[in-house]
Length: 170
Image 1 (cartoon, rainbow, N blue to C red):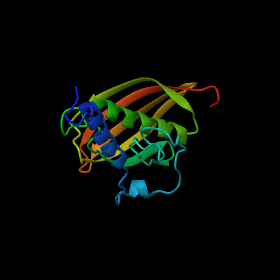
Image 2: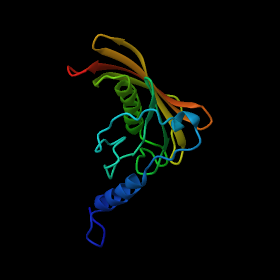
Image 3: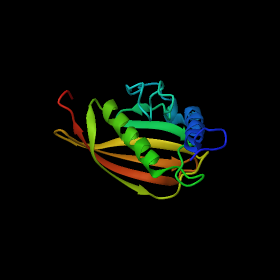
């Protein structure tokens, strides 16, 4: 189906979404946990969550302290499922990245083997959120981690539990 200009409606929606997505970026406030310059986890510049060179990415900038990672994220249009509500898959990706960053900060390279998430409250466009990930325990190659997404007023919006498997190079 196309509009009268001959451009497919889906192409217009995609172009608008890409514009919205490209505008998504980290807005660091005065949160003291995010001001620690002690460590920044290494990242892939093309990562959809933390890659600064991915024009369609979220561009979150994680800070780490020991085996804890933290970032602030302002959810934006273009990542929605229902109008004004951020897609659960995007929330999963953000929490997965927070846990991965914590694991990297603890000195491991690992891949997500299993992840469970509980959505506690909806995440809306323009919500200012704090994402945290932390390592719970390490047992040989198995790394257990958790992640949390909270609103500016401290209300948890989503919580994740995951098992990672350390790569042979760890």
